[in-house]
Image 1 (cartoon, rainbow, N blue to C red):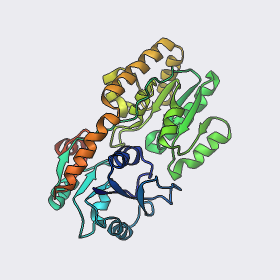
Image 2: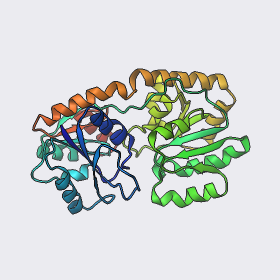
Image 3: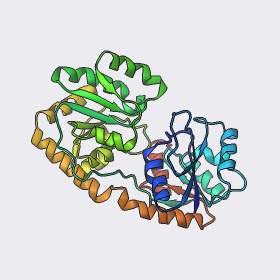
Image 4: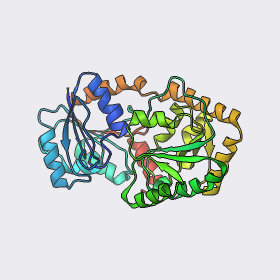
Length: 337
């Protein structure tokens, strides 16, 4: 099978796109053409891929041209942003839209009329679970993933300043939106925290190991579960999260759910610092749950089988992680669309 995967908004090394879906296809012997903003992110495409470079948030005209080039002889197209559905070439294979953005019921209905969308919940969010993660320490907390206002970057910087007198350092591992980079550089310059920028997934996961806690301060505008929650669970870290990441944490009993407030996060971290036994218990619970339900190698073969079946059918499909069409529409309606 020749598959084409396309995005203009995600980092080319996005964990879900590159390290799970594309890697599973390559490992199964399929050919993959990957349309992504490689130059913008200064990323060298992985071996085995056929890369097609596009600007970040490319115009529809340029996205259309890139897709035309990439879809030659393709059996399947997987797009990771709704906007690309407006840039599809006339001649194209079956299309899968992997929904990872806020979607209104009206948009879903429009897409269904135009693309004969069939829903699926067969590609869960997952992670690579460590066999035996090291015990949690008490000298640092970590935040994995993209840094932006809606991910709590302002609160993270304030937290770093409040934690310094207690001997706890904050490690930020991930790229930042342009608007918050000056804040992060200033905080690092005065020694408040360590910001590592983009780090390849396997190294980022290892860097997180042994921390006092993994942090997730997303607000309610973030449209999907922060995948860092599962990453922390897979590395045996106690978790301190805002309500946006609460569901798996509460289900597994592997962390603390707090308001998006610096004082609340600070108190949670200090409570964990003073209680090594509790840290160990929370980390062990999360790790066990991640190994049972969220270990990507356990899901990879099923994803490949689905992709092969989609390539053999003429209908476009929506993939909503953990939610079908009705669930996604209902979720959007509850959030006000």
